Length: 432
Image 1 (cartoon, rainbow, N blue to C red):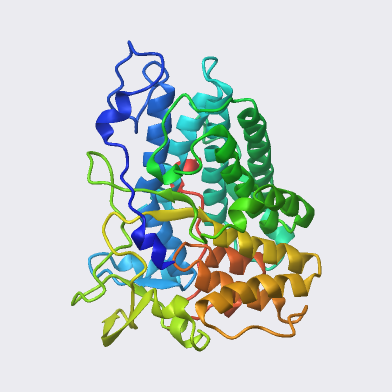
Image 2 (cartoon, one colour):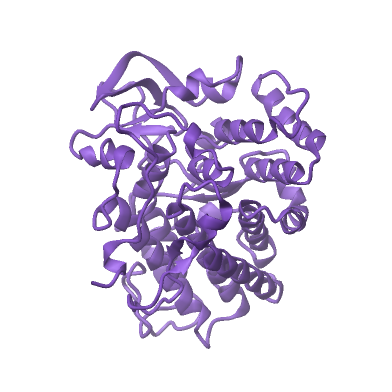
């Protein structure tokens, strides 16, 4: 993942928000807060991208801390080491509300495009895909830890009514996953009819995926992700086959990214800190090193073993992340290596342990770790979870993966009273 540091990306300056095709007589100054009367497709697209990254900092910290990938040792806000590690989560607090609110701003922009009589197929295909991505982020955020997948399917997950009516029922995880699939398939169909180019501009985070023909690969990658989470192996395989060139290309880091800038109303990469600083907030969980396999450069390339230990609130770590090298380094939404690991999961789901082992060993060989042998039903899930943990480091997948396979009880608890918390539906979304 070191090559992420070498990717030079610059988000379009906010001044260029006013560059779009058509509707030139409209003046829309704030892409983050559009209205039906002022918004254009370009402003809605730009605003949706902006809101995805504006809510990313709190969302990713939530997922990393609860999933025991990292600590966030912030003396100015002890909720990161108290509430996130011991619970219960305050439904009115920012740890719960911020990711939800930012995500629904994305969805609001997408819904405006989808329901517009003036939006073309490309615009609708983009909006449906991003709407699905946002819902998937939410459904993973609010998922329970129950090992029974049917119980998780029936738990409240997100709102599918986008009208602000909190009296309407919150949809279950199963209902939201069905909506995600519907959005992705409708988006694929619209993209297929969209011609050679979009009528709007995407940020550089979508380089290589910024035409209808290439953006549909992101759409199908998301379909593979949501299908694997539901053990829909045939559906996942169909999606993965359609993105084979991306999945098995020469660059494991090829993909779609959040990009950041110092522009007005934008944010930076909130996971970056100087790993040599005297004090750090984001620290890697010590088990990332102790659970690693000998020679694995996915550890040495992405973590600094510090001479000193950062201690706060009964927690300590001597591991600083070095994954990102600057304040504006991009953060992945989806990379080719994730698709390879999803393919390994599909092989395991179909009982093809040799096929899964081959994929995992290719990644391990590239990282300098010894190859697996004897992959079978007794160890396959643990092995693919290990590979996802080290290949998708700090991307926020681990908590979702451990819930998927009913293994949250195996996550480490570092203090008496600690637990694996779940996030409620925010208080602002519940009547009373």
